[in-house]
Image 1 (cartoon, rainbow, N blue to C red):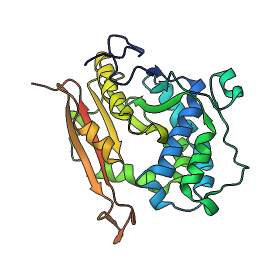
Image 2: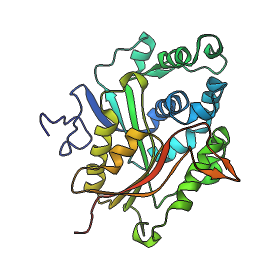
Image 3: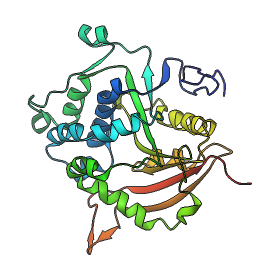
Image 4: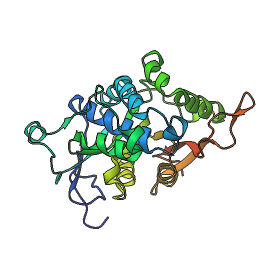
Length: 283
């Protein structure tokens, strides 16, 4: 790695990104920022969600943002959720700079998506995300699973969310004993990879992903599992750097997957996968 960036929680594990970027472990104080990035990125710019739910996106953004608190907090509490911060970020408001960043989303504000289009509405909400966190990689220990009852409100906002995970689970033909953990600190579950729209093209997602693989390896984890609903995410995780090895545990194409005789994810056109990265592969 030429000119390594050591602005990370672990200087012995440098970053491949530009010097202006820094990786930090996320804390509860960044929960709302992380949730905003994940919800905004997915509902406005995912190849799946705005296609499946193209109307009243802003209203759904606010519902999903409120419902995502449990998922985000559970992962931040694991100590293995990280964010990329822009150390050269220019605050839009003095009020934000005074407190290190602030989110200004207001559910009572009128949306302009119906009159000026989704791009304009996406930018309007982006302008209200006045903080230096620009990308997140949320994770939790597989030995401490999600409480599905508490996940209910988020899955109600995005009905196909649960179907994606259920389908990938049903298609996964691995022997559970070959990968599932027997205790804490063995397998990491990734759930939420998002970068702010204005920072796309900086290779932040891939750089953070590879950094996390090394970090989890150094902490003793033997594997990381991630569900991919984006081609770039699938490519990054299914092609890890040596010596790591990836297994595509299950996958399906939304263009052909049927449920009850119907194309369940129409009109979305996306390859969806579950990837497992072996951090300590056997020779």
